[in-house]
Image (cartoon, rainbow, N blue to C red; front, side, top):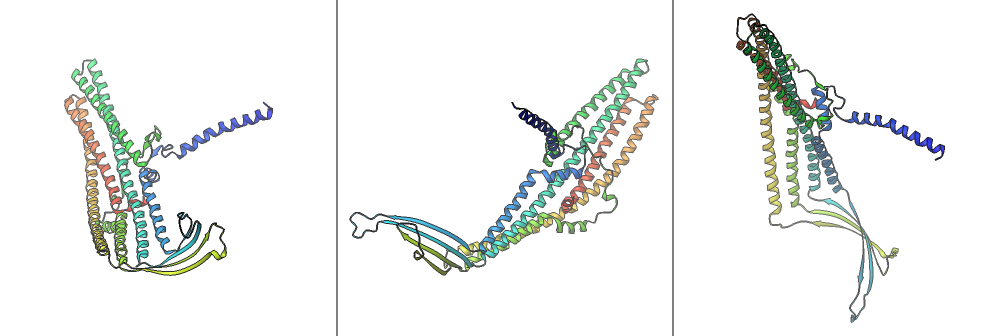
Length: 445
């Protein structure tokens, strides 16, 4: 092999080796979640909106609706058709006059609809309202997805906090077990206390296993909503700490203002409004059957015998206006109009019903956040009280003034209160996300 070839081959290998890490880094950079160290709710929402396959499917419907508008616009332009044909004729053997041979025909025809009972206008309006409905449907899918991500995210935070609580409970009882064993070894403590704390450690370990299982299942659900594989997350990634305050602490919620905001912003209302307008246009389309259709048609055509080498004398032109009107169709047009009017009433009732549902959802969400807010304050106080109570009982137990049963009860109360506080905080933040969802303000993220 020549020296030059050796050099080129070596340089190509060096270039390939250098490109592999860069390609791997680029792939990691384009994998959602691959570089996450701390996942907060805002980031989870952004990844979900960018990567959710279900949302991308809804977005593709917008393009379909946009192309339908273009199809309806085409009806306003003339259509131009080119045709050609070859006809071979072979008469019977005993024919008096023979007309055997080939006939070549070619034509260029232009047709323009001048009037069709306003059908084109209503069809174009309907398509545009359909495009508007598709846009609103995409917004609504995004609204619901963002809320689902928030629910799953806070459920994952709840699982994380419960893991910490179970681990803390296990560590506490493990410490008590060491002390109980030390007292028992010197004859100052009972074996029953040692066994009690061993049971408590095992119980806490069981709770820890269940909490870790809940975390794993919840993480799988959150990853699916975000449109990523949970395996893409780094093993050491963590969640942002669970907040302790929120917007509700600074200003009270005014229910009727939120209702007004929801009626103005909710995309599903916009979608239903577009459907109502589409139903209006459907009535116009149906009524177009009562009117005549007027077409302007022009043609440039030619015919030649035996061969397709056309000459100028073979062609001629024509232009004309065609008026067509249906006089009787067995009541078909009237039935179509009646059907369209009924569909319009249905769309109106559906819109009115949705407005009632929106009002109900907003008022329920306000009640939920108010209840959750009061629960958080109550549970914070309860945790402080139960922790202080556990500390006092522990001091009494070490002084021999109370039984291990009393200490078990105090520790159980503390673990329960801490779990209730986590649930209350998660419910509060989920309720806040629900308010943003039912008013449509979560689209601003």
